[in-house]
Length: 104
Image 1 (tube, rainbow, N blue to C red):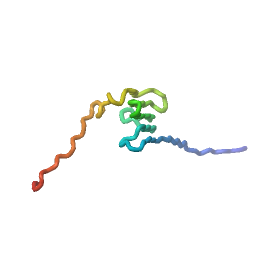
Image 2: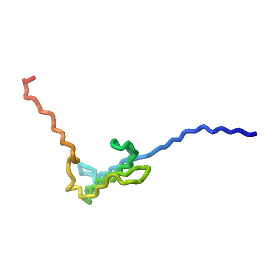
Image 3: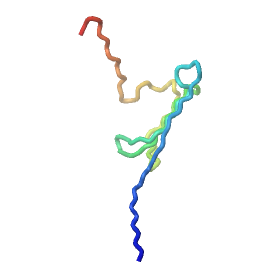
Image 4: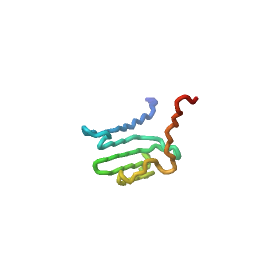
């Protein structure tokens, strides 16, 4: 009689990355692309997030989908010039007020 026992553990590795394309004489990168895996705070499911900011073509692309099911959670593809500075529901942070000299 032959007896085999297999003990194992599943290990999953997910790789993400970020790329920036710069041109000399410009302040901000011409192209920024981000690909990452996150956990959705509301559902607790793993998600894949892809974001591309293309300043030359005036495009902003943002795509979020669940890793396991492939269900699209969020998708935006719009001109960068029309994108809001602050996402919906979030207030812009106010810079701290500077105190005049001599006051505590």
